[in-house]
Image (cartoon, rainbow, N blue to C red):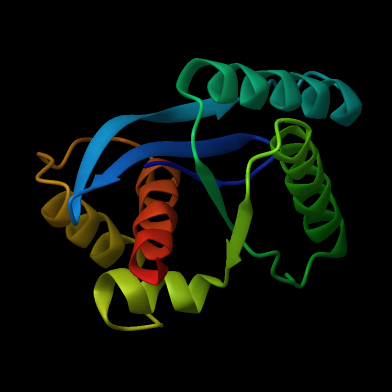
Length: 155
C-alpha cells in the first residue's frame, strides 16, 4: 500500500511516499514543492495544486495523510495555510484517494513517543525508522514522512 504524506505550506510543502507491505515501511520518494514568493497567492496555490496532481498521477497512492490545520497567532498565516490545505485536499478528492488528517501532537506522539517533540527529534526518529542517513533536507520533508508513518501506525 502506497501512502502519500504531506506537510502543507504556501512557500514550501513537504511530501513523502511510503510503501507499507508485510508490516514493513519502505521509503519510496520524498521532496519539497516550493512556490515563488514573487507570485500572487492565487498563482502559488494553482502551482501547488498542479504539483500535487503530478505526484498523485506519478505514484498513484492508495491513501493520503496530511497534518490538520492549526491556529497560529498570525491570522493571515493561518488563512494562507488553510488555503494551501484546501487546494491539496481538492486535488486528492479529485483523484478519489482516501484522505486522513492528524494533529501535530498525534504525529509526534506516534513517531517519537512525545507529543511535544522538537523538529530535531522528529527528524532523528524518521531517519531511524526509515533507515535514512540524516541529510540536510528541510524539516518539511521529515514532517511529511512523519505524517505518513503516523498514518501507517493507525492502519
